[in-house]
Image (cartoon, rainbow, N blue to C red):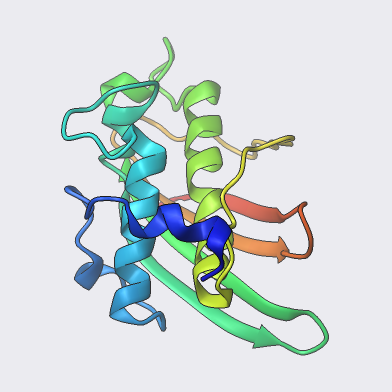
Length: 168
């Protein structure tokens, strides 16, 4: 990995994500790095939940990560996360709050971009600049959410991902 990504290797091991439980075609070492980075984005790699969304972020189950070669486009990554809608995630109508869904999208859409960075040896961390969210239906209290994120573009300094939330 390049010099700009050296910080990734200094992160402590994730305290709440077991990389052996992440399915997909990344190596065990890549899954560990992904878990460490994901944890860092949730709470700064601290032991106690801290910062906006940390307690929710720690409940997100990182299910799988796959990278595949797409003809004419290079590599593409897909990440899958799951979480149950709990009382602290809903609005007065007992459905997933829009701000909460935006947080989940922000967190989970970074996963495929970070994975590609690990796979290609680049630092792919960054910040979200724009999010367009279209709601098709609401997720009720107790619903199981399946969050699927895919890289769209991974060239240069601007990267893009698509994220969809499904209610099970």
